[in-house]
Amino acid sequence: MEWTPMEINPEMMSKLGVGESWRFVDVLGLEGDQLSAVPKPCCALMLLFPLTQQHESFRQQQADKVAGDSEVYFLKQTAVNSCGTIGMLHAVANNKSKMTFDDGSSLKKFLDDTANMSADERAKHLENNQAIWKVHNEVAVQGQCRPEADKVNFHFIAFVNANGELYEFDGRMNGPVKHGATKDESFITDASKVCRGFMEREQGEVRFSAVALCQS
Image 1 (spheres, helix red, strand yellow):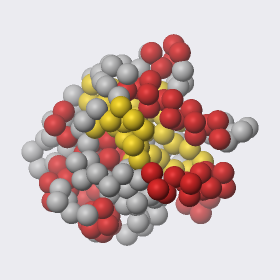
Image 2 (cartoon, rainbow, N blue to C red):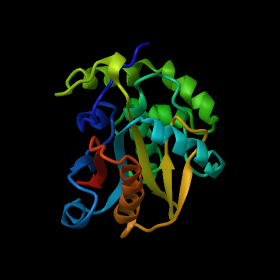
Image 3 (cartoon, rainbow, N blue to C red):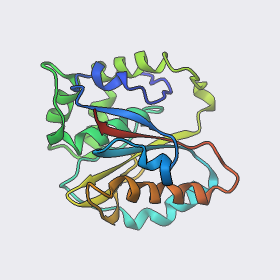
């Protein structure tokens, strides 16, 4: 199954049967007033950024920082162009107790079915999940600036407060990365600080964007 490159579209969660009590909102900036404008409470932050040589070098240095924590939900990305959906899955799965789900939710079914699987098994399960794949592609073709598949060099990652720890979830890595303690009140500030590190490593690069999962 071929996955189409996508933007984060708020419709995606509702199409997958996630209740409307939480929604993705655009984060206009990662400092000051723009950050304080993000609605509270906020339980996840997703960052879209360009994959560059600097980033790949940084990731190699981070390889030994991967946390082998079984108390958080992590899945690998094996399907090309699925990073937006995987970021959303990481955001929802690690906040599952806060969410409400519609009857027959394909997302809840996926999370329930894969709860006790390894990260690689979850990846294989997602590759073969027709319901999520179909919604991903439906949403992707609605994107206002849909990129061409062969030119895509952008990637989504997610940040979540899980059990008082700030975790970074990147399906291209072998597990989540811990960034230290956080709490609900400071989560968006703490996650944004890590995101600014991504931006500072890419001198002259401005193609970054973020969305936050907030209670509506």
